[in-house]
Structure formats: structure tokens, C-alpha cells
Image (tube, rainbow, N blue to C red; front, top):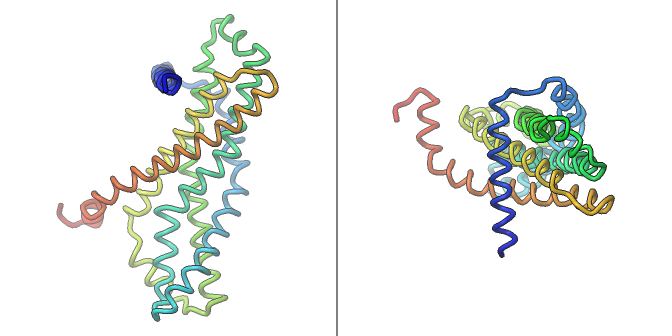
Length: 259
């Protein structure tokens, strides 16, 4: 119990140091390659995952809706599920495994080989040089990649619904467009924003505090993914509760209605 409290306090101090380092600016010579590594090289797996999630969701939802004669409502269920929930969560989960583990292993390797200590001896802050660029890259790119996942999820669901289940495209897209508004898209992107920040902070923290040589690098990569995944689930739950309370008001405001 005491160890958990100590780790929580240490992590809070780490977050504060990252926030303080943000005021000093970003090293774009470090961040540029990270944007390519985290963003561009992750597009393929995000597109593939998003597409098949939409297709699987369409297959499963059709069985339930067809039993009640509401198969044309499939577009509404698929699009809302992908945009509000599955797109952000699955994109973040894939990136927690691919990017979060990689970041943690890379920084842990630098720590084991004393490169982190060398930076400090040269007067370069390891937090500013290593953690801040990776945190910002995750914070920016996870919402961007979520948009790609949402697009492919919607496309995959539409292909299954119209080509395999034979639903009329007009009715499919009519129900889909009537049920999804701007606030639904914003909810998904806000979730992705929190997920991305969590992945960046946790991965950097675990890497900078890794110990145990080569075995410690593997443990750090695994721990970064597990903790990031659990954090994503917890954040998703509490954000879902919060959005459930404010959704009616926000939908009216964004649609031009009164409060």
C-alpha cells in the first residue's frame, strides 16, 4: 500500500515537471521524427483495426436488429458505437501497445546504458528532451489517428450492411446521418485527447524509472502497455459518465438550440 502511494506521488511530481517543461518550449528537432514514427507508421494498423471493428459490429448488430424488424437502423448503431466509443478506445489501445511499449523500451534502454545520466551531466533536462516531445506527439496524434479509425469503421460497417446484408444504402445512410451530430464526434476526440496524454505520460515515466538491465527493458515495455490500457479503461468510464450528464445540453447548443 505504501509503495502504491509513493509511486502515485512520484508520478504526480513527474507530471508537474513535464507541465513545467512545456513552458520552456518544444525541441522540434526531436519531435519531428517522433511525429513520423508515432503517426505515419501507425496509420496502417489503425486503418486495419478500425475497418474490421466496423465490419464485426455490423455483423453482430444486424442479428439483433433484424429480429425486431429494425435492420435499416444498423447505420445508426454502427456509427454511434464507432464514433463515441470503439474508435477512440481501440485506436488508443493499439497505440498503447505499438507506441507506448516502444517509447518505454527506448527510454529504458537509454537509462540502462547511462545515456539519461549523460544528458543530465551535459546540462540537458531528460524530461524536456525525452518526455515532453513524446508526450506532445501522443497528445496530438492519438486524436488524429482516431479520425482515421472512425472513418474506416464507418466504411467497414457500411460495406457489410449494404453488400452482405442487402440493406438499402439510402435508408442506411439516412438513419446514420440523422443520429450522429457534431457533439458525438467531439466526444470521441476529447476521449482520444485524454487517452493520448495518458499513454505518453505513463510510457515516459515507466521508461525513466526502469531498472534491472535487459530484463528491466522488457518489464518496462510490458508495464507501460498494461498500465496505459487500464488507464484508458478507467478514463473511458469516468468520461462516459460525465458526457452522459452533459450530452443533452451540448447537443442542443451545438445544433443551434437554447440551453
